[in-house]
Length: 390
Ligand SMILES: *Cc1c(COP(=O)(O)O)cnc(C)c1O
Image (cartoon, rainbow, N blue to C red; front, side, top):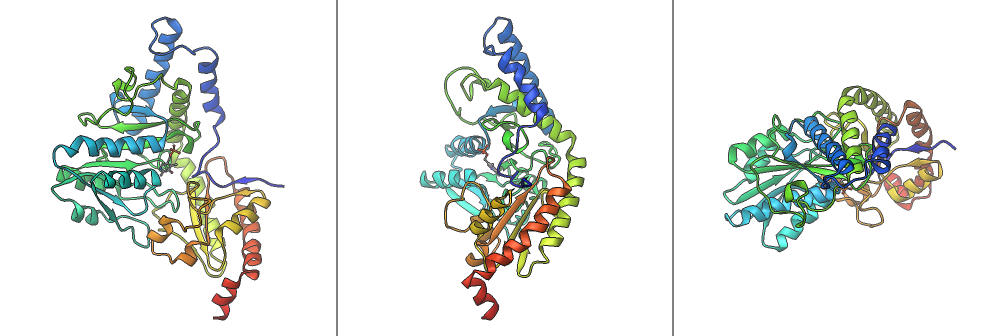
């Protein structure tokens, strides 16, 4: 049976060149970067080079890059860090959006319990935050605006530069969860007015458990982990050198290939969208143009997303109903509700996300496999019967 991995927004494979960059670290350069002898010093050089590469890919300076264990950690550190740093100055208000990743939403919720006030901005039917809404929500007590670069469930890309400019104008710090955007859009933190940015390796062909946080020079936030002097003393613990080297390699490749990859993915997903929308009572979630080229999210009326996933899996297609983090729960996705979908439609969701490992044959296979499955599920669905026969 043909196998199609169409869940690259949940995680990606580690690519060959990334693995090849990592292996020598495990085998030969296994010294502790803080040790003074040769293989320690050698590991330090790899670490420094990786930091320089990551900084270059973001338009940042080396000393603004802090390695972490991934996206969730970077989001937690950025948001709680800024909140706690500015609390003493009477700043206790945070602005975010309704459709952030749970790493951001649950962090904001934790801060709310500590006494912070949180504003959740609308994302409208197209799944895009309005910069003017950000400006209207800012007040004297606002410490931070945190808006994701691209949404993980519906792929919509946010007007980051404009939001950053508004924050700058009002002297408010701006964090973006760029976990989905990294390697898919051109990012320049200075040009785009970004103060803090989270990224995670496993979304762009580096291993799981390694990520980074960009913190603009001059912003002082509390240490995440106290201990040794690693990461400028702000996040202690012996560095995951191989993971970091892999992350830098993956980011370098992803950044160099953005345009060619996007051209290919856009062609693939445009065809997929056109074909899938021929299914009656189907819809594409989020803006058709302002989206990650590799991400498509559909809803099919009258069926359950979970059943759809199981049947696709039986045909060798790995997909998701939305976010990997909420699968298993019966609640519809907060992202789909945030763009105004009623519960019963949000339940019938399907996210297909592609990376440069996918090809046109994968799209052919999905186009051939998906519509009959939707029809079969609908034939068995009392809900569909009611939709059609009133
Ligand atoms: C995957 C993801 C995260 C979490 O990253 P981890 O490295 O898995 O902790 C955070 N935000 C977004 C938008 C994501 O897609």
